Length: 155
Image (cartoon, rainbow, N blue to C red; front, side, top):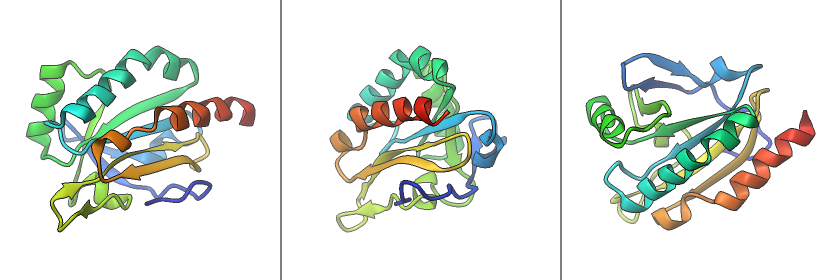
């Protein structure tokens, strides 16, 4: 898992339209919160995404762009995004899963995909990183809120 306080790697992901998304594209403009879902079929992860949707105005006011990363292929991600009316970019990996690119591996004999979140400030520094094997622990709302609030004081 990536370390808080370290520079974010320039991970290249793909959105549901097949366009490349470079995390470095946000540098200098916006902070980025990426939520890594265990899977699009995970009911707990879907509740976490709905919380992000409910909080989207709060994130926008703090100049934070929300992205959702899923381990499935682009077509599955696009169908899930459309069906659930997800207002955020939904990202997949181009050559591996987005999760593998940031150190969220499969645990318990490779059967459980870890979920988690990463907040990257507008300068490209990781300000919050959290991962968990069980989906109930993959979205640490209080830690995300505290990290976003800390962005305000950093200017």
